[in-house]
Amino acid sequence: MLGTMCEMEGADVTTAIDGKMALEHLAAKDFDILVSDVGMPTMDGYELLARLRKSARNADISAIALSGYGHSLRAAAVGFTSQLHKPVPMHELLDLLKAVMESKRRLRVLGIGFYSRN
Image (cartoon, rainbow, N blue to C red; front, side, top):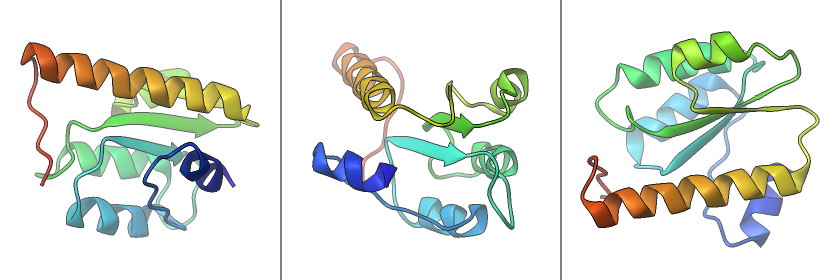
């Protein structure tokens, strides 16, 4: 549902049913933002991001954790840049996504950071 709502706002969305599938998508294509539930089957969002941060592709991705448990310190420790608590109000997610994209755009304009878009 969140993916569909983001698509309705013009986002290009790729979804995965678990962390393993998400890693496969992230290894194959560059993304601007990762929005991940931390409580997924097979591989939780914490392990997903920890593995992603060690990979060659998408290692510096902006990552948003979705959690019903409120483990903000753990999310920050593995590298999530933001966290939203479930149930997530759609307007909060959209506002955060827009803010992250605007920040990335400004950094590109200023020449700060490295963002590869293949």
